[in-house]
Length: 274
Image (cartoon, rainbow, N blue to C red; front, side, top):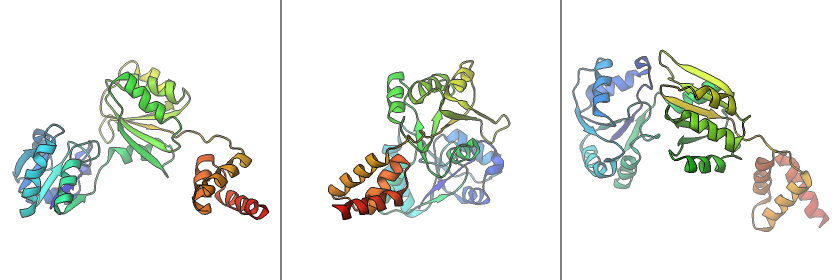
């Protein structure tokens, strides 16, 4: 069995009793950084000394087969440096290989920088998208942000403190200087900071330099006012192309902010008239 174990993102007090129990019994631990894993074991007071195997971005594909074989005979616990493995951290290729080989995969739920940042941001949480790290190169970063300019859901990013100011400046340029943004720094740690403002305001704040682990939460694009007649034509066009009326009304309602039932009824009336 492959066990994906979520570890504290800062405060060791967030470690679950189940995590401590599993680490206390583990024979094999695959860790993003074995030195960090050793410090975690010591910090949690775990006396067990399992076999530690490095599993990081540069060797995961090569190591996946070996770990899957080990997992056939016993549990292999997978740790990232912080949070849940596979979420912008190593583990995905291992899980992919385990699934293909018919080896079981389970997870120990726990701390998540993504959900923690989203929860404290004050931005809508009912629908969101996690975008991971923005590209390092400025041109690629701006292109990635440009592609998200119309995204209606709240967006969560990770970012290096060294690139934060540049990323916020690009965000202001591509998504709008007034777009609401929240920068979460050092979540759950002693110097935790949640800074809210517009993209332009936070870009100016970050220009002086920011330290620590960073998550950025960005408000989704505001809905644009829609013309009901134009929206109805979009529904009818989707229906003409083979989409069910109910699905077409829901799709256009999502894109325009108009009522799904109103569009559905209007389309029915139009079809009766025709």
